[in-house]
Length: 194
Image (cartoon, rainbow, N blue to C red):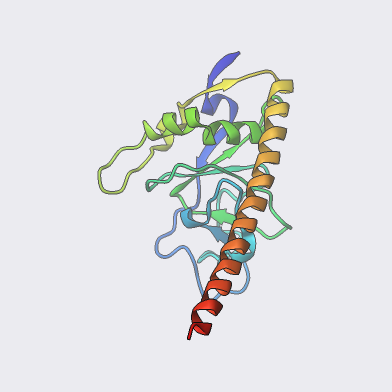
């Protein structure tokens, strides 16, 4: 198995640089913007994203399906593989790294799995600098060593990973529903208590 720098197998770049706030609550069209708080291992909920404070045609680094997003600021280490729901243009801030697979022999879902694995998270955590708010430099992230197995193995790992992410979403939904049912039941019992 080969060990490659992340930048040798993925295009690594930062999102859009905003001069002020990233979101514009008065807009109802244009680019949607992904911020650090929106990134989860299971993906991004595009339906809840605000519109960006950027005119159409002015943004760089528009997101595409199969891009991977990684927060460059803060304590969370989480990579999200995105699947855009439609043709709506989506961008992100420069506090988020965008990874794109320009090569046919690299599967984004495999890279996302690796970055979210214990080994990947450990390697990323070593890149963080700063005591109050930690940061990861784009150059440091670009130099992250990543094991690159053959395409067949990448596909098998990617399939297993996507299956697990789907199962996790179902488990989270069941847990949330169970908590609501328990809360309703116990509150009802509490109110009925003489």
